[in-house]
Image (cartoon, rainbow, N blue to C red; front, side, top):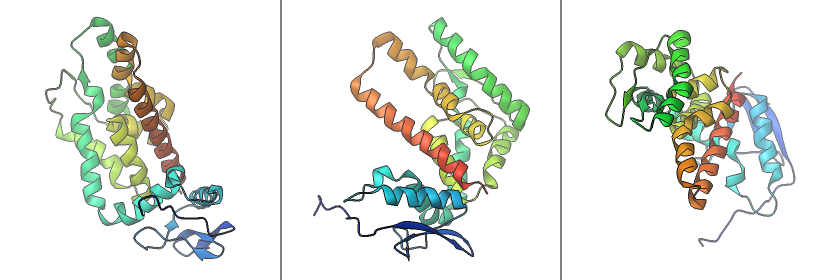
Length: 236
């Protein structure tokens, strides 16, 4: 039974406009989430992306090739019912943001972190009113309540679909600041990804690239870019 995979049973996937959003139909029958809820999404663009994923399946359905469908399922089945918990979880990243934890050495890495990360912290201070402080090593760097509340404010108005995209942008990068910058269009996901991997790429330069680590990084990169796309598709 562990080798069983769902088979393609439909000929055509299409989009339907509903009172509460947009649905996806397989030969005229509505797609439902794993929890059996109606798969209704906020934008026609997202529904069209989901329909394209279903149309692209061949003999067997491979969920790994369906990131927009996966994101919509998570938004409806999970985030919708745990909204406050998700916001609280994501807001906590502001108190442990990647950009605030700096190396004590060597000098070249210290300089690289400063040159790449300080401009983003300055952006957060100027554009969001959230000035974060930095420290060396892994010891907790206390942040002001004002800054943390301002960062949290960027999450509270997002619907469940945008929050689902934000979740992966934040958790994969380890930075609430970088994720918000992407969501606001201040930087591209390419730049955010590069900035989030400063430490890892430094290590590669010093010691070479490990094949297993490279595969793991590529999987995270794809998921990060998928999350950025899903977030944009959620915007009305």
